[in-house]
Length: 203
Image (tube, rainbow, N blue to C red; front, side, top):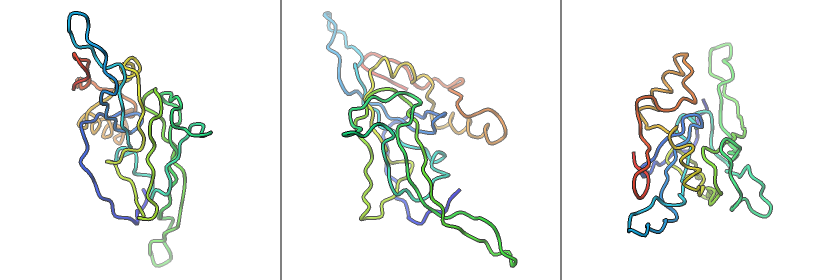
């Protein structure tokens, strides 16, 4: 756990789901609609725009963020590159302070530390956007921030979406993990929160 030196400002976020094994929230919205059938019935969208960011648990071992970089090939740009589920997507550079020891008077000793956190993708698709930091304003990120946007085909989304959970189920998974259970990486149990409906997805 690292001490942050910059105050955060949270924002309201749209409906989202959580990929527990990645400690990331995901928010899919239709990106490209499919034409209706000849008899006029609506079809599910063919592609989805998926905004994503780290949960507060995913951020807990990251200090003040200094850069968000693509882990994909960046020549000439990572935008438009294919993204594979569970492959590296982003690299987050950070710095902060960590408690290293206590002196002879039991005073806490802090040390400057820095590192890079690798974020793996919860979905397959094509990279659309990456979060850019405003260094002039000493901007930091929190669990409400969109770090990347990936466009996925409906078929790609369907392969992974049923493993996503809601906040309550995610909390149970973390509690189980912290109490010594397997926890991390488990999908939903009796909570079915993501299913196909006519015209799109629903919880």
